[in-house]
Image 1 (cartoon, rainbow, N blue to C red):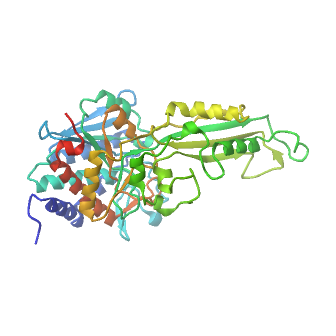
Image 2 (cartoon, helix red, strand yellow):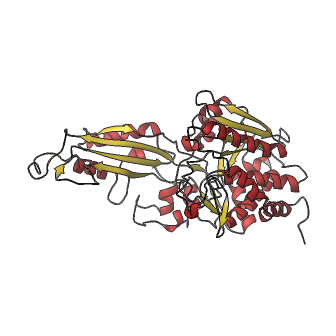
Image 3 (cartoon, rainbow, N blue to C red):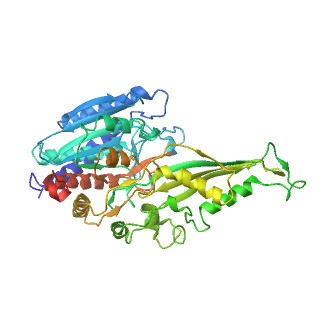
Length: 466
């Protein structure tokens, strides 16, 4: 017997039906077909084509939409809204329609990255996981709730789509500052990144920050014979290796106090209890002592050497290299001052006898940000996911990677909840990007149930005070 109309179960059934009859596949196929690589020289028209495609979908759902070009970056953004009543809770949702390069010719079975294909229960295509498929799931969930609830959501929705996230989100902060009134809301609800594993519904509440710095030590011009000079002159490769070992211990512990928070908040510890991160691929004795692997990834800082060069590794010769370089990346959580990262490293190196190492920031900086794990809206979301799936969700204080979440928390002043619809093995920045079909179907039900529940929640249940 089918669910009664205007019920939560009916809405979820509608979302699942759109998957089962191919409607969702066709919609995603049209989005994947737009080669929206934001790093390409000819990206401009394709980025606008993508926003036009999303606008057409939003028109059907009753949204008012406009494309805004941020003047300094020149990047286009889509801002849309659907207001049912001013006194209802308002959620802001976000996604990005740009992708990394397609990498044509490197996909298995000679797949076209810009064509959605299915094989062995997996859907392949550039943007399927990052991020076209994820925000399309959320739009489809809105459509399912509207269909089941006679054209009502029970809340207001605003939407922001950017087209430069893979290029570092140029213009996003400035756009949000300029459009602060238009983007005002009570809660950010968006989707990006992976679930903890394909079968476990997951929430994360923010993201670790990221900062990369190049360490360089130049001793002389040209190499010196390793026999004639060995033992008499400094080897910058050895010196830089010792400098790195003073920053990160032999067990992976970050040794600069300013690079780590004072402690893991109790709410975060509780949320992470029993969680196995990154699909279980962990070294239990690596990292900050006294923390679990989940706490080290989602509630603490880590410093990683991304590259280290001296001499000519591809063709070593009997010479002491004249210089050495290393690229070090810090992933950090709230409680770490991003403006203090470089000064703290300089002070540390000087104090340990490495004053001659030069430091050069290399790449953009993401700030760390997160919503408290015990926020009322987080409880509502976790209960909703459990109700839909029959499985307890995992709540991560911070995504291990980095997202521009701080723009939503710091500029727009919003609590943030992310419900990811991908998984760690999706190959999102590589050939063969994909999602399991079963995960997509599950995510459609999860988001439909969540939007339904948010539409029935009282403002105070979501932590909204006006």
